[in-house]
Amino acid sequence: MDMKVLESLKDVGATFEVIDCDPSFADTAEFCNNYGYSPNESANAILLEGKAESPVYALCVVLATTRINVNKVARKRLGTRKASFASAEVTKSLTGMEIGGVTPVGLPDDLPIWIDNLVMEAPKVIIGAGSRNAKIYLAPDNLLRFPNTHIVENLSMPIARK
Image (cartoon, rainbow, N blue to C red; front, side, top):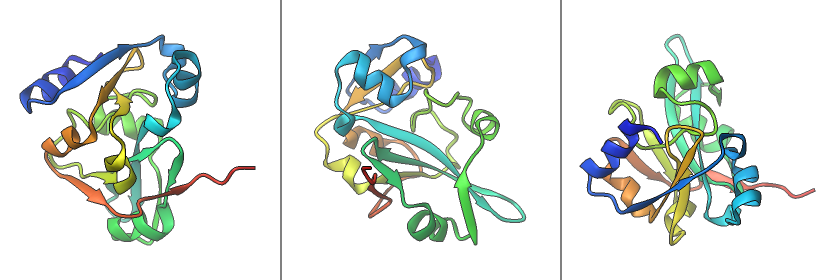
């Protein structure tokens, strides 16, 4: 677990549990399959990049059973004509975290954190811990204790099942 993330959780008085995991199982589907958690209680933190002369960013937190509504909601909120997932390199540069461990905890205060309203309806959610070797399990209202955090209605939509 990233020590900056742990300190940030303690600084805001969050109530949480740390779940250690094998880094090879850090991606959500593998984590749920190997450790017996439901995707309904797992949330992904994904950095979006709004394409502009000076790119703009927001970290989106959505349930694993959904996907970010990039074109209809996120892009408009970013105020850009185009938006996409930030690259692994940009994500690492802005958050200090690798894909599979990204969390809305311990981020720079100027990076907006958008939490989908469905995440807030879950009793508890599993999020990244800043590294690929642990997860954080907490009630989602703990996330609202961090700077620049906003609940965004309809930030996600269900993943189409094939």
